[in-house]
Image (tube, rainbow, N blue to C red; front, side):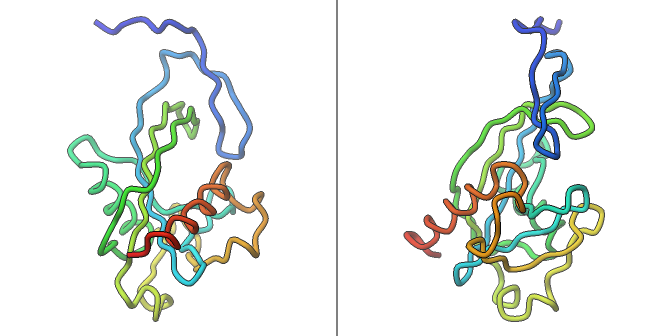
Length: 168
């Protein structure tokens, strides 16, 4: 038997940064994992098909995967390359709605990529066109926070600092 929620509704952030209220019983737990590849002060980011904003590669973890395995699979699916090293970086929790409301548990990793991803990105990086229209090494200091999915600009800044302190 399913336990009844102690609250009746939950406010979720939407894809475009707004908020929408959902019945608490509609929420689904969704663990997700993302990878931040940092190189020469730049971060590999995609442009979301859905919003046009910069997006960190990653996504939902399947029940049979570890968090790191799910991150590596999602990263490969969205970029065409599998990280060669990963180090857990930080965690974020949010309530998010995209077709369905989620209690999102987001795990972030700093990742190292195969040398060709840095040296010849146009040859080895292949965006998952259903979700990402392009991939590029982005210098966040040349961007505005509004160009990122909500909360991601600050996260990218933290990743740059962490990667500078503890490189692979």
